[in-house]
Image (cartoon, rainbow over all chains, first blue to last red; front, side, top):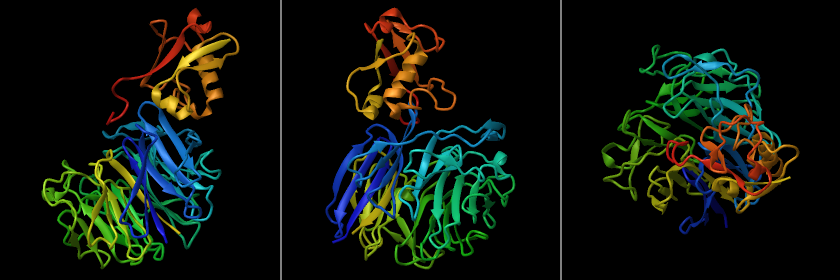
Length: 371
Length: 103
């Protein structure tokens, strides 16, 4: 019978949650790397036992960990992230030039074909790649040296490259997103990049339709529809059907179009999920009701999914990498909260149960479907 | 010579050691030579005490020994004799607060 393994990164360590295909009873292991911030943990699609974890600390900096046995044991690998050449400056919050400084890795994206290859999206925003299982890292500097780099500005969480999407139909195509510069695409394996922000509108920047400067929170893609992208922006839920060349808003009837996560059903490329969040200042669900919203039409028409979720006095947040889906039938959907709950739905969102209630604040959730 | 170093708990866990570490240091015992020895024997600690690029002490770490704060001493200044002789440990201390938005 198939199994599901959830890789959960939190403010104070990583946890591995496992269940058989029924997804009723879960075993919890952890904390791994107790006390450290674990921004992201993700397994190789080629070899699911190969897992990478980004371990960081304000005291001790960045550590990268790798497991070759499905998260049972871990070994530190390489943590040297050196920008290519003289890094130069980007804009600080007040618009003044600020030197590029490495702070941490936000997101890890293992290659679709090679378990030793993995990408890292880092703060200050840049994209790195390792070809040797995370031992050595090299910047794909064509992104940062794209002409708009000196104009990029940090979002509230820092100037982070937080989203990396690999196109399964085209090994040379990749998408990334940066807060708050926007989305970018390469069609030549990372040598050159173009901003793909046409159609985005951000009222809080001087030019609301600027080529860069948009606070993209997350992007999701269904592997069978690699040209279709769904985006949760700071405000607005967007979609593109031409690989990001143009975006249209699909916020529709959402109670608020602010949020962080967005994900796509494993078997239905037009079924998408978001968690609306009240903003700008609050960052918790509207009315204290934790609701996942599902659209079966690729956006615009949304239904609240509430069964099993707290519908009063809930003031948690769901961060950008904290939702994932498995590929079982029915599709499992999972998300973690800043209150330490990890919720699971084994029926595509119709109902939810908490797997755990009292972890540290959850930063990321990744689901692995195992044979 | 053998020099003793007491690392913060998180770095002891990362290096998989308990208690103090004992390091063979070539030449005079200085902050630089001792930290070089730490990173030589425990390569997973590279970048965690001093920055990979600048080689500067990380901002939320301090160095103490013999009841003295050595954090701002020149990297090549001799460490106190009792540290060089292995009679006292060089202490690497993490700030009690700070270093993270959610310490």
